[in-house]
Image: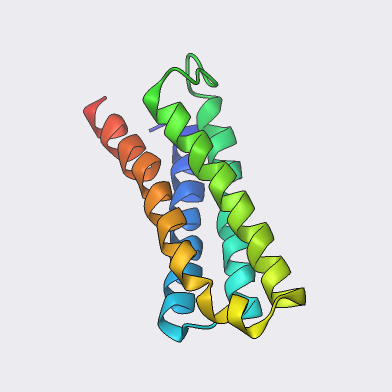
Length: 126
């Protein structure tokens, strides 16, 4: 395993850890808290960093015709929108927005898992 592959794998796994922590803690609490939002942003930051590192290994790093690249881009944009929306909901949103937010978090998280596991399986397949 090359150092770049190791670093990118660690970064993407940290993204999984932090994003999952934020999504599941918020879902169980049924109330969006500031630390959940922080976990979303940390997970997003690790994901962008890991994606950038992985792109340095790819022969065609931004080929949107490749299914993994396309699903990864969709997931990143959804994560960004999710984190921005969560930030707004905590800062200026109503109580209703903070208590209902968990319904959307799971959809974004499940969408994010598609490129995560797809990349893992692609890596194992060689």
